[in-house]
Length: 279
Image: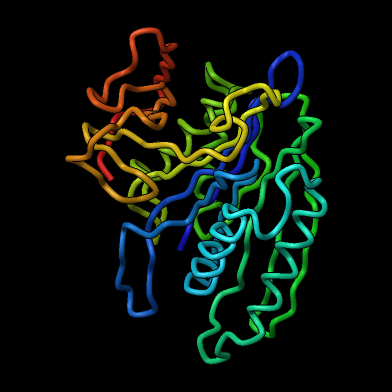
């Protein structure tokens, strides 16, 4: 099962960034679990991030392959409009789902896709398929007036929404950090049924064409929780250079990947509603 949340951060100009966070637990029908499952993806070639819930095997295989095809420049040009990118991804998903074994179909497949155009506008698409292989694709309008949630999905969504009611009245209401703090609090402390493991996070920034290539495309973030590093759902240690990526803790503070503490010049993000926890 899954807890999936997407949101945007808005400043005085417009949408400044967009994020998708997920838990990391895979759950089977016999109640077996695996807490290191990847559920979020970011393109290093274009400004696209994606995530899924529901039918794990097909969605994880399909998105892994789609991102590799995109990152090698094979599916579309990086300057292609979001509408065209969406349509090419949709056709790929439908075509390869046709040969997926019928007896393996269980839950509905739901895939979320946030994309940024060259004009710096952000777009959200939802692809879904039921057990009868009926596919739907729709664009979900993003409210860019203030920082806010743009979608929730998965078995843990109702629990997250319940916890978020408290955060909407907190000191950080209408901020991007408020959403991530709530997500971490819900996952690590409130523990929604059949959701677990570490938070995993991807994002896109609003940047000009003159910005470094790395910042213009999708980004995968490391997460620091209770003195441990996690990346895309897995605990990592004994690696060469942690600060080659950006790290956040559960308060959404920018951290040093080596020391795992808030960076010296990073903004503190206090929130009395959240406590430290271990995945």
